[in-house]
Length: 127
Image 1 (cartoon, helix red, strand yellow):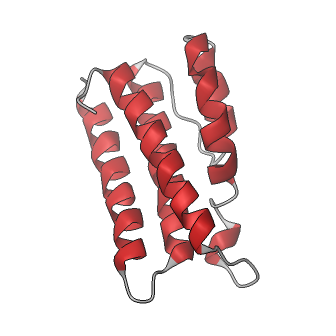
Image 2 (cartoon, rainbow, N blue to C red):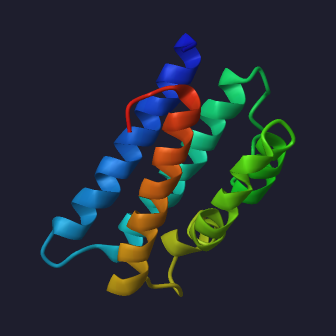
């Protein structure tokens, strides 16, 4: 694995750890769980783009990044169902007016974990 890919993976892992930790706080911080799950998925996509020699675009659009990856490996299409709900947590969840529920936070964790497994498998990393 390329050095820069490993750095993206480390950042993605850190975000997922923060997402998990936010749910263990009392009371849980669902907004932060959702945000960090989105960030983890975004960074995993950027890691794979980078590893494949593609320049990760400066965007929070998970679907755009997935489309770039699908051009090389159409089997990644299955991730769309996991990325679509996470996409809404890139920006708005950080500002007043949007609140995540426990159910949304737990779903975000599941989706981020599935993205993690899929990308790590693509990179040849243990899942």
